[in-house]
Image (tube, rainbow, N blue to C red; front, top):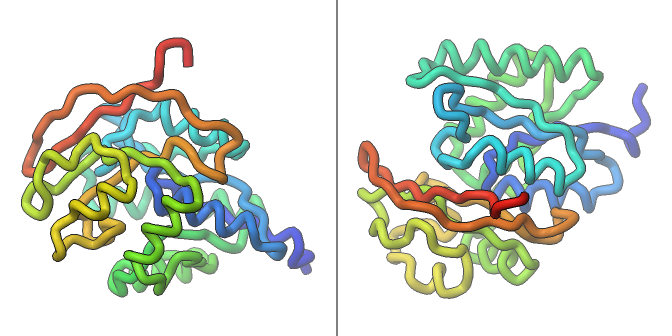
Length: 228
């Protein structure tokens, strides 16, 4: 049986603050080792689904974390069947690598958790939710106070004014959020790209690009600084 001190977990990586903070917490545990990141990529535009983050920036995050990146290319649009087929290949790869646990940065949405548990049970893997049940207002402040830095890359304009796109996730951002918006954006109100924090060996050098609106969502492009 594998020594618990060397239990390896792969982390579902969206490029955002919750994934980054989950990685930070997992690395503080003596019974686990984070072995790889799993990221779904829209293969048409080479960006992270929903977050709109460039694949090259996710690669830069992985380098700053010192972890291999497992890319999961998805078609666009992507049916649930196509998504599950792509993920089944990842779960098979995890099993072949003797990985038994997959971690997620989910906070409280029960239907999402049940779906993940069902999919992993079918694959013989165990899910892990290091952020689960945390008060999101408290968690958001802890992330910021802990040194996490992130920029808002996507806003659901039906839930949050488009002016929030491109802003830094900081105290002022939290103070300006409407009262019905989750401080961590857990219901999809906004998505982020983490570019600095205690989980990274060094901050990523980025610039903020253009902002566009598409299908009710507002996306702000984050670009690597020239030479990065």
